[in-house]
Image 1 (tube, rainbow, N blue to C red):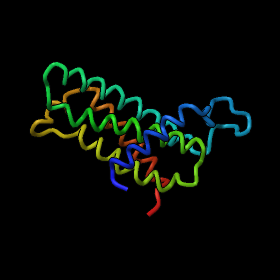
Image 2 (image 1 turned 90 degrees about the horizontal axis):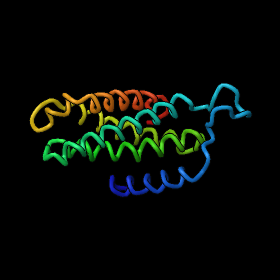
Image 3 (image 1 turned 90 degrees about the vertical axis):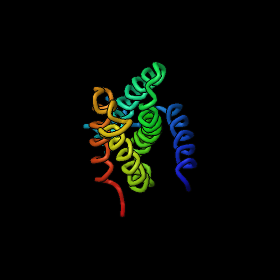
Image 4 (image 1 turned 180 degrees about the horizontal axis):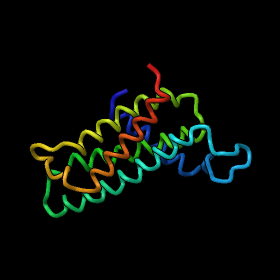
Length: 151
């Protein structure tokens, strides 16, 4: 499966997940103290949220003619899809979660690196708070994914 197929599959999973009530709702009576993968759910949610803000920020700059933010916007969009799917799989404690966590860790690492680039055309990215926040959220999500990923 190539990257494009993966992202299309993740997009479909994210849309499907949005239609299904989350299994990790607060106040869920079967599991006091939260879902089994609550830390991963929280990290993936935060990462998707920060990526959404980063993407919006990048798109505004692109609209003003700053083409240096194109890669940042593209990576942020991909992370929104990846982390939304991760959140859903973690909430369901899906059997494929460890394998998906390995793929997701690689994707958030790519986004984190893009947000941290400080040379060449991406120098602007390092100056924006939305990019820094996205990179930090990616690092936290990557750390949670690493706890589950398989070799």
